[in-house]
Amino acid sequence: MHEFSFCQSIMDALLEELENHKMKRVLSLRVIIGRLHQVIEENLQMAFSVLSKGSPAEGAVLNLRFVNIACECKECGQQETVEPPFFSCTRCGSGKIKITRGKELYLEKIEME
Amino acid sequence: MEIKVYKDLMGANEKWAAKTRTLLKEKGIKMINIIGSPGCGKTTMLENLGKHYGEQFRFAVLEGDVETTRDAERLNAVNVQASQLLTSGACHLEAKLVHYALKDLPLDKLDLIIVENVGNLVCPAEFDIGEHGKIAFLSVTEGEDKPAKYPLLFQESRFAVLTKTDLLPYLNFDIELCEKYINQVNGELPVIRTSAKDNQGLDEFVRLIKELPL
Image (cartoon, rainbow over all chains, first blue to last red; front, side):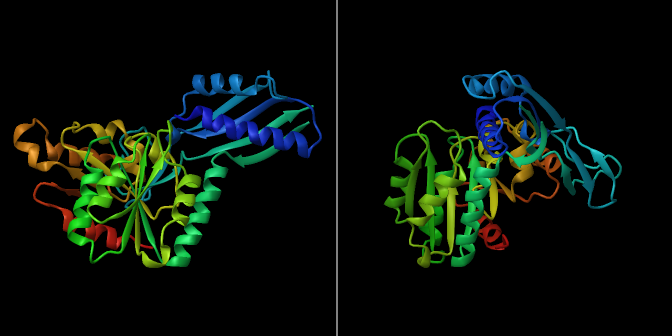
């Protein structure tokens, strides 16, 4: 959800870095997205192509890396990936878990010229 | 050239949420963010809170809606201080709008601020508005499996409120199954059953708010 909103943040970051490094064009970028955000890849690509039109990021390749949701059981310490919607430990069955991965949402790297 | 950036894409919203946290801490105010479907009973709960606990709690409400000031008007009519936030199309409240609205409240005279988010089980769960806790509202007219269908809200919340339990005799809603689904999505989430008709659960609601750490 909110792929346009995330893309707007991506665009703001790209323009800022282009300015900071005195570069003219973005060639590619990589964004890391945790699966808890329920972002749809297709929608994000579409939002990016719309928002980057006419900007120095037009035509840039948007690479996405999705991070699976992982958790640690507070009862037995088991660490594992989680398939939503059920968040419980497969070893001891406890529902007392701590999410350790899956909330990431950041622009990792940019290739510019 | 390739550069590593590590730029948080929720950064802008987080900055405003952090400003709100600072302000609330300075004033010693607790803020909760109640989230649930349109019509699940959020505003009604707050009306009842005003009627029965208005003297005890010094609280104000920030009402989030796409259009109309109806919810704020309902609360003002029962002497609850309420400001309306209109999103004009956005499906959730974001931290910047909430921060600006907060600054217009008489903060020195308040202990609690309740944000009633836009009616929506999806998007409000994604956005930190600087609250001390999100509270999930779900009515018994919505289907037992909603916690599984909307897991992020139930994962993020500090407790869940089941509303309209007076209607159970007329529905095929299995409340224990619903509570089981909630437990599977978040094994540490307290759940309370409420009914606005006879104020069932209102005291529990107040107790859980009081227990939320500042």
